Length: 154
Image (tube, rainbow, N blue to C red; front, side, top):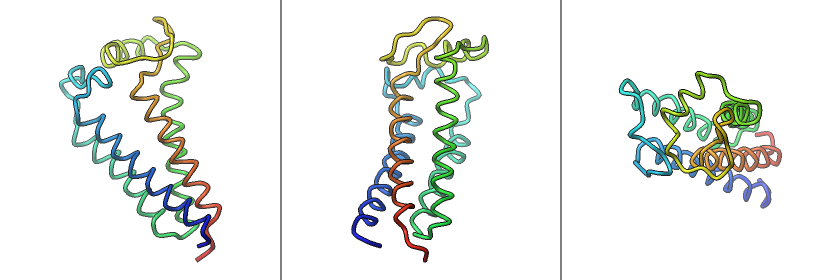
């Protein structure tokens, strides 16, 4: 890899690790009012959430770290899908209005978390923990994409 490609590769790996660490922190550590773990439903399965999400991110990291362009492209697609789900889940209700189910879920789980955007009852704002998650995911996607664009076929 050229020097520029290596820098993007290192930056992408760093951001991937940072994203995973941040996600695990907000999922496991009580950082109220950043997150509100006390509001989780009684039937919330933390282990299943970690298995599903953390292992998924570890797979993205692993296939990217191999340095094989077509595999690393799958990693880019995975981070893009992750960001897409985040944007759809949080920004669609904020911009066009939330369904009754989403408003109820939001009120139960995120009403007490830190907000930085204006909101009303029909347009609940993404909370700060999810804004940070989305920004980290976007940065990770960008750096990973740039690294893949600079990879040589191995």
